[in-house]
Image (tube, rainbow, N blue to C red; front, side, top):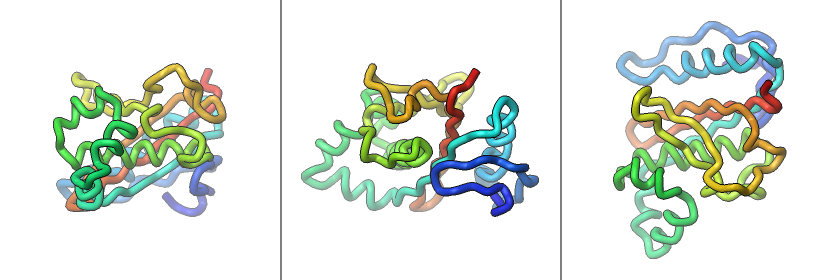
Length: 170
């Protein structure tokens, strides 16, 4: 995304998205997906909140295998996420990156929201990930009521997520 879109790390006001750029063939085109999500999110309002995160799959794997791994896993991932991942670290890493991206989009980071409050749901029919609260606790800035879009990808040792939230959707 070009600087002329005036994106900040956590909050943004979209001016006009540029055409998507080509990425390496055979890989998920995150730029194209982000462009579509940004365009769709700004149809009803010009205000959107964006967060992005990259997670090292090998570092997460080491953390999960450490003595603190079981506690981290239970404090971070919901039963639905653990069931979907089936112990695949790449799937857990993309969900961890998504939770961090969502916290950044909210604007508080992980200070005021626990990772397990955020559930990354996988739609078995469409294959698309979606965001939903995992319990009844409100999120900071009432973000549990926002319209959310998230894209996830991994390649090699990197898992990446981009989360876009639209406050006060109509």
